[in-house]
Length: 479
Image (cartoon, rainbow, N blue to C red; front, top):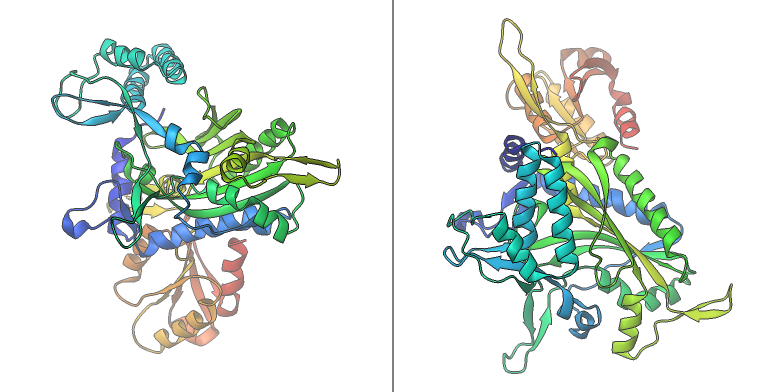
């Protein structure tokens, strides 16, 4: 397992320094586990969203998208099981008063064993933790923590409370007068907005099973132990798709979407060795099969996307609680039934962190005569925040005018960046640092023969091309 703390800290620092991600409310010393996306981070995030949305809706004939509200009727979360089941086992240190998720404490010890080369011991501990979590054996989990002599990272003691469940939903009040306000929840997932609109979409879109409904949206979880930068936050964004199918076909569709989603990830240009499937030992209350697609972050393999066979749990429960029929009439078999569902759910913020982790590269370019190096973000061109930088060599002799003409032609087709300040070498380095795949330098020869120098980010190779070819060269790489 990879565990490169230095690289991870470098990514966090780079993200702030170059306008990708900032601590939220930083001028007031920040808010724990909440982050803001800067000018380039928001572009990267939008490009990932657009790429996922296109692959899920535009390129699929039987999947459509919706945008449901964050606020939902509180009975929604009773029907979905979140009121009763959406919780994590927690434990407190009596001395420091610090609260921990039980699985995080034990996983930290597993990582230590793996770093020490004790893989068999790590695997055995993982198996034992999974068994205890599956059985909700809280006394057994506390005993395991005590037997491992796990200490609080703040207080340095092993004086633990009992293990207990902690509900992760944020509650708020709906209504302008406090006495008349009703308690509602900020949604902990986007899926329920799809389920309650199942018949609206099916009927208005004349959709036939199998079909899917996709959504991108904010979700909120009161994570007590939020950590690892934007990997685990209290306010985050999900990209989910619920695929409605005939009962009895869930096994084949589950396998189909496992492979389809893995192919999407590999299409980002990330090596297959950086991914793995992880089957769930303890299934959620709604699932009959579930797995995660895990990526090898600098802090180890962690979940990026989940694929779940949700059975008919959600629609059946919403039918029971709302007293509204959630059935589908299948004309091909002349039968009414409540559809089963295969869910694909990918964390957008985790995907941003995955793409940043994969792209972040430190290169030593030193020669015997000179020390040199660069930090470059090797994004796939289609995801890069800026596709093309247009750089006049000097601020005079008509070069800015030519560069501006190029900018006018290209900026309507893809995101461009114009800069005149500093030496061309420094400008190249700044573009490398935000992941711009192509730089165009306008020089004095450009005035004579209408050509420019194009520089390729990854190889740093340069070649002379006609100004008229710029847009087509860049667009070809964005497909």
